[in-house]
Image (cartoon, rainbow, N blue to C red; front, side):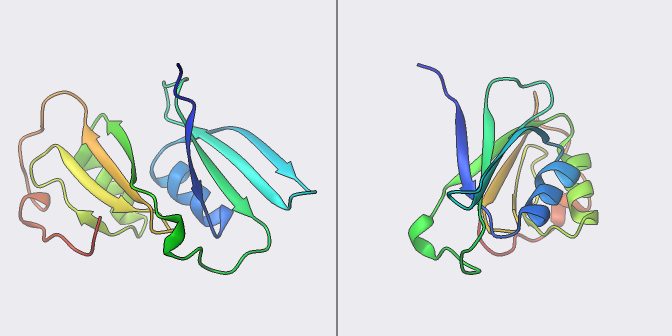
Length: 140
């Protein structure tokens, strides 16, 4: 058995690509536009990981929300420096819902309210400010 991908539905493809690629650092590996089905599939991967992908599914003509019937747990990514990653996301306008106060784990949300878990590669980093005392916010 081989794990292929996780799929998430997105409302605004450009906004989602900005979050996942420009801010989080994933890379687009392929794209498929299906005119007959009126949807676009975009597959992303983490740099250096050629196995698992995230599939963004953009349906061309849907309401602004998919409702709660399409719930999704979360995506998880291991990062080289959790503080640098969270700072880049914060500077890009992303709320850090669960800051890396322990130097190891953080949660943020995509523009489509999808929880994204970030885990520090290797041992936790030494807890430091502003992350150490930053309040948790919202849900993750």
